[in-house]
Image (tube, rainbow, N blue to C red; front, side, top):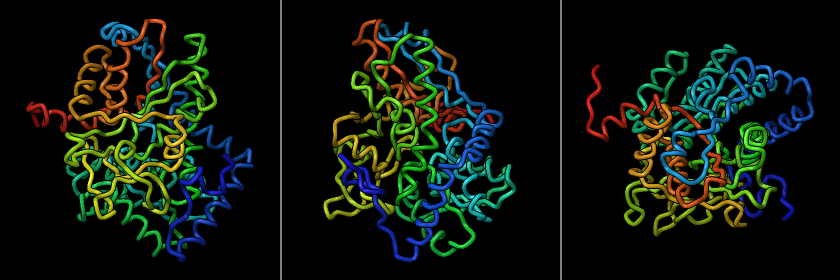
Length: 396
C-alpha cells in the first residue's frame, strides 16, 4: 500500500486543534531538513556512542535457554544504555532537533519514568529547562525515577485526573504545549501522537533493530526465527521490528499488557481488544468502553498501561505482519524472577512481558531456532513494586 503523508495505511494523521497545526508543520519541516543533514547525524552518532554507550550488546542468554529447553534466546541489551532503557536514543535525537529549531524549553510525558529520566538527562546535558508530566499513580509506583528526574533538574507536574497514568499525562502535556508553542518543544517518548511524531520516534529508535540485525548475523550466522518486544505505545517494538519487516521468514511478536483479567477490563491489551479510533492526535487502535469513550487501563507495568498504540503498529497488525499477544501480570512477574536467577539480569517489568512470551515459545521449538528479544530496560525502578506484590520487605 502507498501511504499518504503522515499515514500508515488508514492509521496516523493529525487530529489536533487548529492552533497546533502550524507547530506540527514547523516540526515536520525541521525534521525533513535534518534528515538530509550529514552534520546532524554525525553529532547524533557521537552522543549515541560516547554518551549513551552504543552499540548496546546482543547477548546469548545460555542459562535461560538451557533452563527452558528448545530455542536459543538472544537479548538485545537496551537496559545497558545510559539511563537504563531504550528511551535515551529518542531523547537525544529529539533534543538535538529542538536545539536546531531554537526551542528554549523541553516538556515530556512519562509513564514508567524511563522516558522522563532520559529527557531530563538530555535536557541537563544541554542546559535546557525541562518539565515532565506524570500521572499521580505512576509517581507512586515509580518513586525512584521521580527522584532521579528531580535530581537531574526537571520539574514534575503531577496529573490527578482519570486513571492518573500515562494517558492523562499525555493529555496535559499536549494542552501545555498548545499554550506555549513559541519557545517549547514537546519531546514525545513513544511512537504515538500526531504526525510527524510516530515517524520521528521510529527513526530514532530504529538503531535498535539495525544493530540487532548485524549482531545476530555476526554471532549466529543467520537471522532469528522470531523477534519479540513488549508493546505499550510501541517505540522499542517498532524500533527493533523495522529492520526485519522485509524478512518474511522472521516472525514478529508484540507482547502487550494482559493485566489481571481480559474479561473485566483490568488490562491494557489494546491490540487484542481495541478498535480503531482517534487518540492523542492520531487514528490508531484504542481500548474503548461501550459508549466509545477511552477505557481506563491497568498493568503492573507503568510503561504499558496506555489505552492506545502507535499507528504504524496498528497498520502492521491489520496486515498480519506483526502478531500481538496479551501477557498477564503473573506471567511477567514469573519471567522477571526467572531471568534474575538464570542470567543475573534484573529486567524492567515492561521487558518482562516480552521475556514471558519467549518463555512460552522457546520450549515448543528445537534448539536450532533463535528467539531475539528486545530487553528494553532494566528493572531497578521496579524492585520496590515487585517486592510489594510478592509480599517482601525491603529495609529502608
